[in-house]
Length: 239
Ligand SMILES: NC(=O)C1=CN([C@@H]2O[C@H](COP(=O)(O)OP(=O)(O)OC[C@H]3O[C@@H](n4cnc5c(N)ncnc54)[C@H](OP(=O)(O)O)[C@@H]3O)[C@@H](O)[C@H]2O)C=CC1
Ligand SMILES: O=C(O)C1=N[C@H](C(=O)O)C[C@H](O)C1
Image (spheres, rainbow, N blue to C red):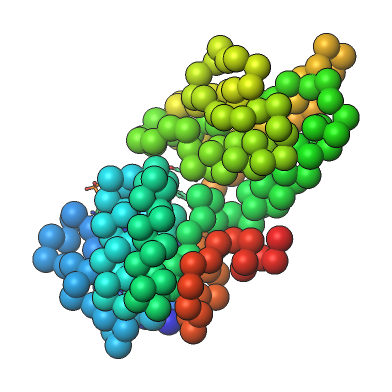
């Protein structure tokens, strides 16, 4: 495949290395470090898919530009989902292809699946309070993490005692605490904790490296070719 990489930071560089190792070609790299290269320089003849890992303030414009250029786009940037409906509309209008995941790791998507199952069971049996915690490296600019928000939304859908999330420790009973910690170079750790007077049950995912995110994003790009519409990991993995 001919891939356009948008963002050449920690994820973009790791995706470049893994893409080449898998036999893909890098058609171009769009990043502030390469000021002469723009998404508008590319179209469907030169690129099979774009992969976007940039910044919460940049992702929406990049995704829209890809859709305008007719480029299938896999986006992993977090912190921009308030704009997602506009991107989904443009994707439909242009007959394009957009793949989004707050986390491309297959392990995290299994974690999301188990999280929803546990939330439904906890609602059924009662007696537990729940909170979400995420820990990331100090360079991370958004909080809570996109992954923590996906987990929180999964809990809220299946555990009706919680109707909204809040990124703070002290909560009203109906608020789900989603707590963020930034320390060292932690790749990404997410923990869902259910506590009662009697005991504690935890579901934890700890990324050891970025390889899971990278492999998932490349799988998504390979899977997206030839498809039209808006997709996520549940579509690709059949979860
Ligand atoms: N969905 C998932 O599985 C994962 C998602 N992420 C998310 O991906 C995003 C990027 O993460 P990461 O690679 O660690 O971040 P980095 O900060 O390491 O890299 C981001 C890169 O994007 C560049 N950039 C900024 N603005 C633009 C723009 N308008 N167009 C093109 N490039 C731009 C930055 O340049 P400069 O530094 O000069 O600003 C930088 O080189 C974050 O939102 C993060 O939360 C991360 C890991 C996994
Ligand atoms: O910024 C990161 O590093 C990560 N961001 C994603 C998120 O916000 O959930 C995914 C992963 O946890 C790493």
